[in-house]
Length: 167
Image (cartoon, rainbow, N blue to C red):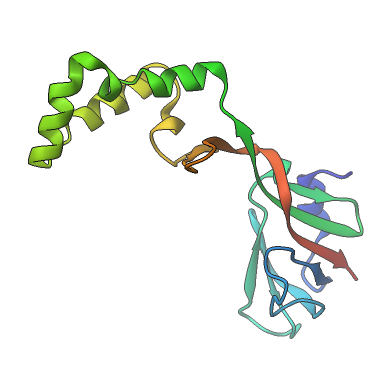
């Protein structure tokens, strides 16, 4: 495999690529249509079926861990899901809003549309270095599925999102 930096260097204006697989959108409008790189920037390229176009769709290279390049194909993956670690489970189960001594604060927040317990939780997660358990910014976030709470982590390769061939 080549690096993302090599992909960015080797994919130049005028090169043609074709989307050959898109498992999440099986009837993708650009599937099996040759498109040309019409513009480059640091985080991706603009593609159009017309070489001389000035506007096109943007193919973003978000993360080196989620992008594979072998010189002939580009594969872009979704972030992967992983189980919570013991520390993450403990942090979620013991945040201030779930503690018995703060029950009255939480009940008051619910009745008055206040946010004191929210800010207590936010500070707690910041202090323990797990802000991603409280918000969705950054490379990790919580997937609050009812049956199975997981961490969506952009450092883990998930399912294939797009596969391009370089013509």
